[in-house]
Amino acid sequence: MAYLIDHPAVQHKLAIIRDAETGHKRFRELATEITMFICYEALKNIRTREVIVQTPIAPAECRKIDTDLVVVPILRAGVGMLEGILDLVPTARVGFVGLYRDEESKQPVAYYERFPPQIRGGTSIIIDPMLATGGSTIAAIDLLKKNGASDIVVVCIVTSPEGIELVESAHPDVRIYAAAIDDHLNENKYIVPGLGDAGDRLFGTSH
Image 1 (tube, rainbow, N blue to C red):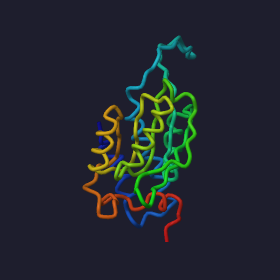
Image 2 (image 1 turned 180 degrees about the horizontal axis):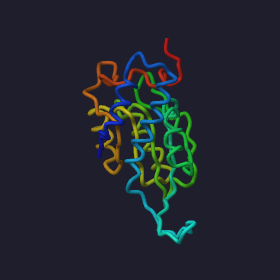
Image 3 (image 1 turned 120 degrees about the horizontal axis):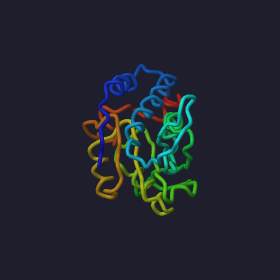
Image 4 (image 1 turned 90 degrees about the horizontal axis):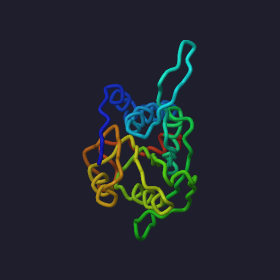
């Protein structure tokens, strides 16, 4: 199921990050900020446990996160969102998935995967700024499940109806959180209106 984070603060930042005039430094800052907002919502139902904390005045009944969190950026653009979620949950562990698209089959092929063992029994959060066709996201989910993950969340900044439909059909148990569900994919499989090439804009590699 897909969830749209329609908070005014998120939508304000989304307007700035979409702007073609926004440079790579500000783009990275906004990606971090938007990611934090989206993950705040995505994690609202994770398991907690009750603890007693001694304040300077008296004992207080509190709650702490009681599940292992593993953040999995899809290389390379997903790395640009990593700081946002680690700022929110500094104890989260990090795995990585590297994918490229085969020129003949047009299917994503994994060239790198590295996961901490806590994906088994914990919550894995796949991060990638753009969920366009859904192919890379499905490949990342497949890899996580193959390695024992069962509770998986996808966090992106912008997605498309086509991408959501494909991911939901392949993995109906995976929740998707996004700041925008855009109109469609164009003939080049870019999200319209989208962000452009998020990787290039994050790292200043565009011409």
